[in-house]
Length: 293
Image (cartoon, rainbow, N blue to C red; front, top):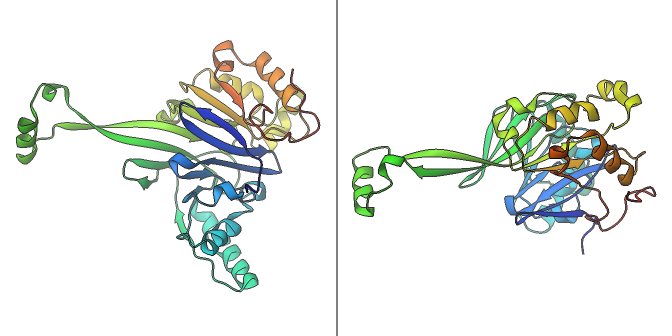
């Protein structure tokens, strides 16, 4: 039985399960890509996923690290991999060791430090690329990118044996193609992410939008989050096909948030939007104010 009632969104065959409320918990599981963006409180749905991409160390995003790793060990699964900024590695190791002492068992872990621009291979043709964001110590976003080889145009008409012969001669007959599948911004203040090609062109963008009211501009700046006005401007410059909104405030219902998004975003951007905690995706309402509009 699942330990959490996560929202479930399907986009072009890709299944995205998650829960995200500011200050409470953020976890986004994409099993087909074998990644989990942040770990929240380590729902059971995340345990089989081999790679946790930790955006930063705030408890609502990172509290479940030790439990995730311990449960994999308990279930006889190989050590989970956690990607995070180098500045977070020592604290994470301390937490894992402390829980190991409390539990009476060592907790195996594969901890991978990554910084802006670093890549990590998760499948033969699937890579994670980290990028810097503006939100406290060691904050990162991540893109999951598929890499393919394509035959150069001048060789398209050749037969199989002719292609093999050219390869044997050492001729470069292919070129690399990158297909950004999903980008996760995590928590971040405003940055022009449209200047990062693999983020701008990701098929799916997962972005926080915590502060939606005019009077919350200063709070957004102080907390290094994007205000709706900044997000609206950014969204119009992005080439994503889909945008999933996460990290809504506990003080605002989904219906109210959707109404503001509809009003403040351009029609083009709004047509791309799905709100993760929308009750049509979630198995349960996350607060008592989720009446839709």
